[in-house]
Amino acid sequence: GMDVLVRKQFKDINTWLSYSYLDAEYNFTELPERVFPSNYDITHTLTFGLTYQNDHLRLAAGWNWRTGKPTTQPDEATPVVNNTVNFQASNSDRFQDYMRVDLSALYAFTPGSGTKAQIGFSVWNLLNRENTVSRFYRPNGLGEANAFSQNSLGITPNAVFRLSF
Picture (cartoon, rainbow, N blue to C red):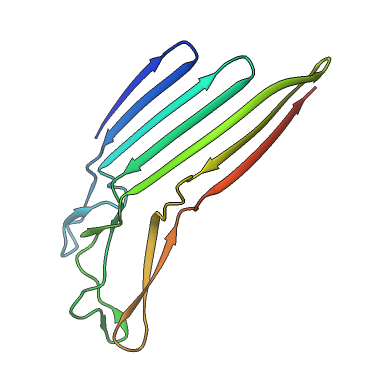
């Protein structure tokens, strides 16, 4: 694999862009499919971040994109054989690409002598993108395999209040 990180600091603004390349394969001599993509073979990952910070306020935005994770789909012609899901070659397909945008704001203030406070708000997955992270299949009794997907969190707001004394 390979990782590249580029950072640039302007007066109150910090930016970064990172890229990762990964080619991860399993190699099993005892299996019919000797070599196939690993479950962690996320080939390309691209991340961009931007923060603005002054004495009291910190604003941040982030964008994350990556190649979809490898997955194994049921065979299209015969998805179920003897009430068991009949799969294609291991990890021969991929989920859709993953993409997420996050925003946050944090404000620091002094409510009294010897006391510091922070109040903030963030939104994870601002665009409410449906990102599949895993999927499993069950025979439905009609010769078909029903898919059950697990997705990452949708739009998720968070609030924080910190008090130090």
